[in-house]
Length: 342
Image 1 (cartoon, helix red, strand yellow):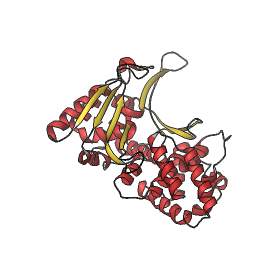
Image 2: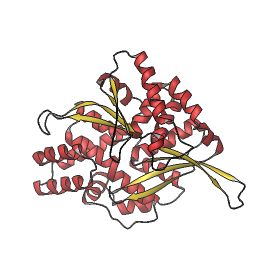
Image 3: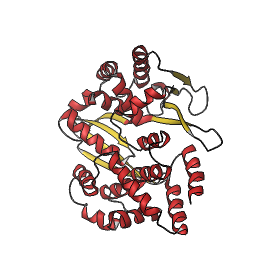
Image 4: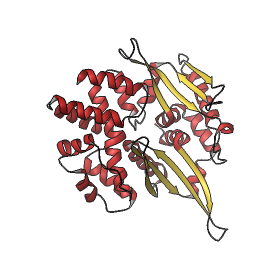
C-alpha cells in the first residue's frame, strides 16, 4: 500500500496549504493543514506524516464546534518541503500511479456510505458510496494552492474502471441551489467499496460499514461511533484547548467512571502537560488505543455494562447519545431502533 497516495487523497478532501509573510515583508512561512473531527483520524494523520516525511505535524489545534457538540482537530506543518510535496503535479502523479489508495484517502475525508431502507427505517443496507465535491470555480473561498481535486477523482475512477471493468459508478451535477455545480460521484459496486474500506481505515465510517455488513450489532456501532466522534473527541479537545467552558455529558461521564474507572476531569489533569502532538500521543497511550479495533473493544465493554443498567438509566444514556449524534438518516434509524431496544 502507498501511504503517500493515501495521504494525498486525505489531504485533497480535508487539507489546505497557504503562505504567510513575516513582519519584515520578505521572509515567508509555508503551512500545510489537515482537519478532522475524528479522534482516531488525528492519530493516523500524525503517524502517516511521520512515515512519509520523517517527522510529525508541528502542532495539533482543537476548535470547538458548538452546533455539532464536538471538537475539530487541525494538524499543522510549517515546512516548505511539505508544502511543495502537495503541489498539483505531484498529487496528479500519485493519484494516477496508486488510484485505489488515493481514492481510499479521499473517501475517509469526504465520503459517505449511502443507505437503502427496505421498509421505512427497517432492513437498511449499504447501497453505495458517495463523494461530493465542488469545482474550484464554485468554492466560496478558492485557493490557488489547492486545485484540481475533481479532475484527479475523475481520472482516478477512469483508471480504476479500466482495471476493474465491473466497477459501476455514476457522476451527477447539482444544477441549482446553494450546491450548484457540486459533482456527486456515486459508486455502486459493493465489492469495490469493500476494497476502499479496507485500506487504512481511520475514522467512525468503519463502524458504520461493519454494522451494515452485519459484523457488529447496532448498539456496538452506536457506542463505537459515539466514542470516536464525541467521548474521546471531547476529552482530547479539552486536553488540547485552553477554553473549557462546556462540561461532559451524562454518557461521557458514565463511560469514564464505569468503563475506564477514572473521573474525566482527573484524566484531563493527568494529561495536561507537554506540547500538543505529545498530548495527543499521551491520550492514546493512556486509553490503550492503537486503532479502531481498540475502540470496538471499548464499545463491547459499554454494551456489557449497559445491559445491566436499569431501564430508566438505559433510556437516559441513549437519550444523551442521540442528543450528541450528527447526521440525518443515520440518526433517524438509530433513534427508532434504540427506542425499540430500550
